[in-house]
Picture 1: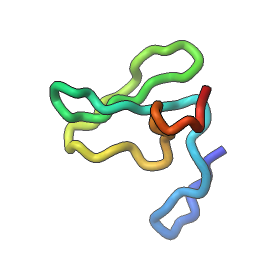
Picture 2 (picture 1 turned 60 degrees about the vertical axis):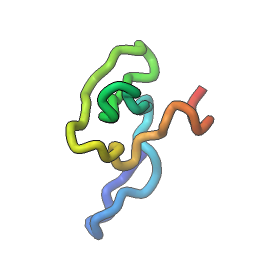
Picture 3 (picture 1 turned 120 degrees about the horizontal axis):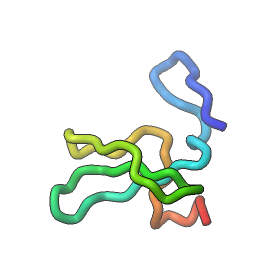
Length: 60
């Protein structure tokens, strides 16, 4: 489970969430790993902090 340290970083990854980059807009989209539903999208083009990317193999 991810924990905020208070020093502007998070230790560990957020459980049951993954993220992928939308190829058309370049925005990052967060997905619930259990249901597969999209949850949130960032507009600034930067990935979510502490959320595993779908292609990196940390989540099955």
